[in-house]
Length: 427
Image 1 (cartoon, helix red, strand yellow):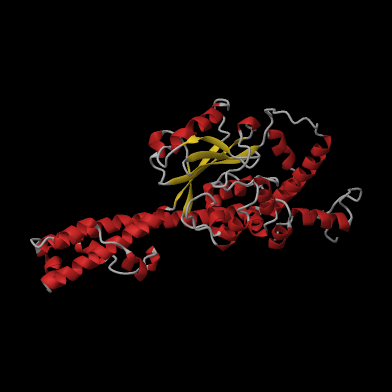
Image 2: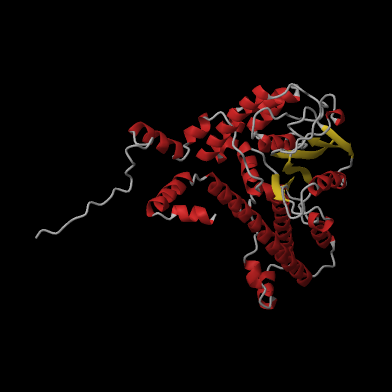
């Protein structure tokens, strides 16, 4: 007797009476859940939401072309915690549930020395907040695209600047590099809902504190002795008072703490990001000065005693191994080239040592070793900052990866196995 075979049910079979049974609907479903391509992101007219993750903002600044500025998360406004934030702090970005300030407190017009843009497109507040700060940092290296944009919009009103940002493909493409297919679908839905809501909205224009507000990024920055709150959703900048370069954080803290206190206990519905001077700038400069100082000492030692290196090897007591790893010239791994060393200044203590005729060879060798140990710390700090940059790139790449197709496949697999329903009930 021939063995009996049971026909195996196809896993991808759809009931005939399903609305997804037709090839056309199936193709539409697959297209909607497919990962967003680079062309999709480039051609999408919307703007995606971006989380308050410092790594994302750092990568955006880098792609904008901005140099010398880094984002640091500020986890507390306590003076002790703020002491760990690199200086200078150029500005602060505050994420919170938005509510409009009383329009009466706003400026009647934007001061000429303040670059401020309104947010005229949805979900663009992250880029708007970044631009409202970096365009007000004195001598900030913005890159060709942003510098041209800043010059072009110098005479614009905040509203016109906002419109210009909405039409500037370079900014939108950098922003939307974080967009995934679901982000784009949600953005389109939000745009549709906004249009429908605008048609139903009352024409009343009186000030009203809306309770059901969305999360929003707002910038705070001192400009020419005045601390400004730059909120793209408000028509004009808002002055918080006069400050100097050292105490502006003390002036902004009460405003931030008041907003933070509005949230219920245990609910962290805000984030604070600081735009600071890139620590690598000072670290690389200090390393170049260190290398130049060691070079100057070795030249002087050669003039005093050509056999001083033999003397060092015999009296180092195990420290010569560290000196062998000491940079004595350019090293691109640490961003040190000939120009950086040539332009570096001799450290005051090196100048003093070289000018003291009574300094012995042994004292010079001891001082050289001291600089070598200091250099070890500098190189370690530079490597930590470089590792942080690599970490930011990895975080951004993970955020940009579209997991939608994988989630859909796994969910479909669970449904076919009959376990999805039970998981949903557990939820």
